Every structure is written in C-alpha cells, then in structure tokens.
Length: 174
Image 1 (cartoon, helix red, strand yellow):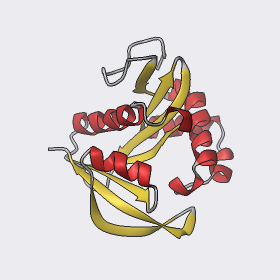
Image 2 (image 1 turned 90 degrees about the horizontal axis):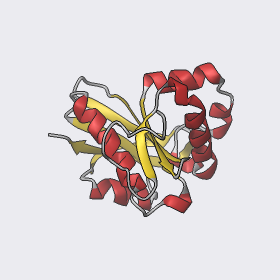
Image 3 (image 1 turned 135 degrees about the horizontal axis):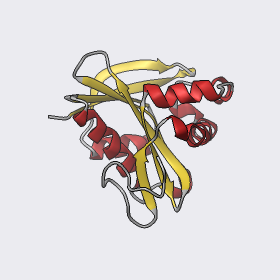
Image 4 (image 1 turned 120 degrees about the vertical axis):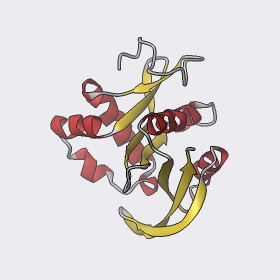
C-alpha cells in the first residue's frame, strides 16, 4: 500500500488519516506497528513481543500474505493495525491484532480500522465476524459494542498470560 495512494475503500481519508490494506511490500510497516502494539499493550494479545521480535523478513511477509492486514497512517506515519483471518467455518472471519497508538485513540482511527476489517469480511463472503478481547480492556470492549458486537458466552485464558481471561465477541454481518 502506497500511503500516498487512495486506500482501497473510502473508510478513512480525513484529517491526514489513511487506512488501507497492506501487502507483502508493507512488511516493515506491519512489523513496526505490531511490535509497538505488543510492547505497549502486552495483555491485549495472545502473542508476545519476545516471540514476534524473533520474526525475520520472511515471517513478516507471510503475515502480510496470510492475513487481510489494514494499517492506519496519520500524516504518513503508521499508527495502527487490524487484521482479519479466516474463521472456523466458511461464513466466519476473525478480527485479530487490533491496536492503535495511544496518542491517536478517540479520534476515529480505531473505528476506521474496525470498519476496514468488517468491509473485508463482507466482501469475502462472511456472515459473522468474531474476536477475542481481554476481560478488563474496557476501551476495546466499548469500541466493539458500539460497532454491534455482542458476547458469545465463550471464555478462555489469554495464551500469552493464562492468568488473564479473553471474552469472545461476535458481529452478525447480515
């Protein structure tokens, strides 16, 4: 994604904010934002900075190829990420790796990233978008509830810190 180009949709192109779909050529931006996310919010993710800090270029290119990764840029600087992957059924997609730099929270970029993944899931034929959120991550939970997600009742330990619990949320895309 060339940040000077129009994003793949008109999800966000205001006040210097651009959200677009990353490809393999964007692996360094994906790496930068993902590692920043793991460093800043370790309790929000199932993976750790130590694990993903060991990834090489091929691993990051694989990440870009195997996911629908969306990056948010503010005035040309990468500030956020969200990715979509296939779910357990043909009609299900999952939102993973959602994060926005703290200085940019509350200004609409999180909503734009979430909308990008929702749009991808719809275009990809999904009827449901699923995600896991760490219990106690109130800001993320509010964002997801405002977007129409609701709890499924499923819970599990956070893989990176089993003392924490993740709550599953789902959004009906029909």
